[in-house]
Length: 57
Image (cartoon, rainbow, N blue to C red):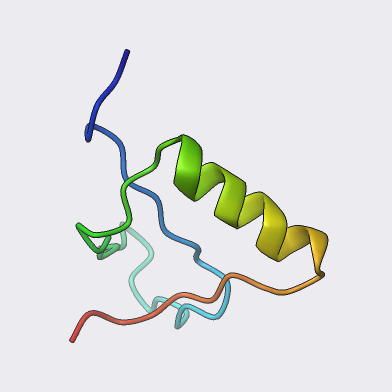
């Protein structure tokens, strides 16, 4: 069982990269991928709502 070992981020709405060799993706540490977050993601998508990329503050 994984506990607090996986994180997720949506890239929808993320700015396009001008770098062709790689891209840094910032993943908020509060977005832990677990059963609760999976239910929230699926509920959001079932309402046809998008998960939008948010730049870190």
